[in-house]
Each structure stands twice: as C-alpha cells, then as structure tokens.
Image 1: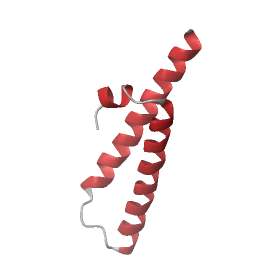
Image 2: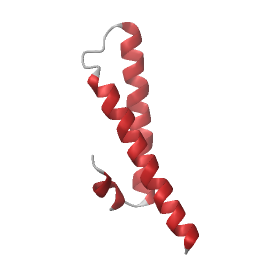
Image 3: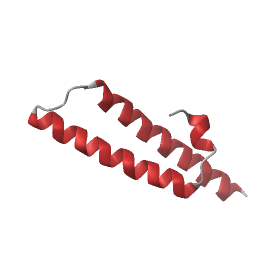
Image 4: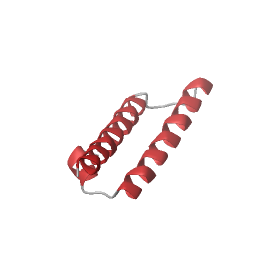
Length: 67
C-alpha cells in the first residue's frame, strides 16, 4: 500500500482501511503474546500502513479546512 493509492480513495474507504489495519495489528500483537506469530516483519508493515493512512486522512482534512 503506497501513499498515492491512498490519496485516490475516499474518506470512508480510508476509515475502513484504518479500522481493518488496527484490527490486524491487534491480532498480530495477540499472536505474538501467545507465541504463535510467524512473521514479525508483518507487525512493522501494518504499523507503517496505519501511519500512512492517518497521514493521508490528516492531509485531506487540512485541505478541506483550507477551502
């Protein structure tokens, strides 16, 4: 998932993506705590994807406020 793809999405789609990523991050943390996590690198990518989505949401909010 890159920032350009995210900028093409609507606010509702971004919020849905954010919710799904947060849910996945929770599940990954739970798997890590129970020792079932196979790919620890996935936690890093999910965390960064959450940050990307939040950044794009903030950009869209700032541009809407400026108009």
